[in-house]
Image (tube, rainbow, N blue to C red; front, side, top):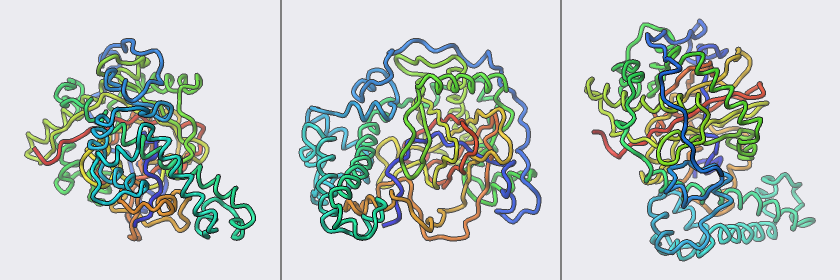
Length: 474
């Protein structure tokens, strides 16, 4: 099994980093620093991108069932706090059927079910309180390992080699905590996957004049036919050298709108609206917040972030239309009108990963096609860190994998279920993209390996919009 960092890093609001990052050009053998991408003609007018958010449910911590009626993306804490306790077996079976198969396979292995088990069997094994069932599985496995004093488990929790004999209870408790957290993340994704699928709409319903005027056929080529996207600009030559689907757009979001959105995020952070600091080994120290700018019962979303979300939501439809005009094969795209704002600071980072899960095409994570990032960092300077690192292939595994890489193996999970996996390739070429104010980065979620470099500042902000796709090109 490939090394696995975590079934999910809740920080999907990656930033990105390009030109101003030291060493970006050298990574591909260039002798000069990478310059920013060429200016684009259109500057977004902050006042013309949409209206302020309408009022929605006052309490952001509502549960997964309510998501279906409110059209909302959950905060991680909300899903942990309101698991599907007492859900009818039929509803639980439907949830499992819509979830990524790799994740369901992982649950089957934890529950000691046969490979041929149907979703109905998994639902029956999970029972009326799936979270409690998985917690008991975690405690049981932790007890077995602690009594055996397994060396790998001891290293995982930072105990000396003989700790299993001297303090088996301490080893068991620490392992149970790690295992329970890991399984809770899997269960969260299983629940959310079907909800996102239900809430998605065709991107044509979010067409915006701003995006239609901004997007060109070359942007569609950069994403779905990078070999055709020839550019005289050094930066795009570097991206073309990677051979991956990515487009970078500078100076297209007005500085006023970007700075207002940044200020609103800072206020939300100061008000305690963000998630707790991530304890995941994939993105330690990150924090995030979901912003529901469209659908039923929107908001409450601050006005600048509302306008920004509506503007970004116009990009997928424009890209789909330009791809069709240029005869570039492009899947049919769908959209859930939710932004995720994420912040990194004081050394927090994100290990290399892809924005999808393995094991089939069902579920929100597996139907992602595009990741759209907008950076909101007015004072960013070289040396501040937080650059987005894009790789031309899967990066080499770390020399010292973090604790998360051993958790699924210790749980007996061999199913291919994670987005944050690495291969044995070495010498991978990469480009770093600086998280400059108003910069947009769009890349193919299913194929592009990327990570976030450690951030040296207190808060480095990015908002992310994920675009889904139906299977197969149009």
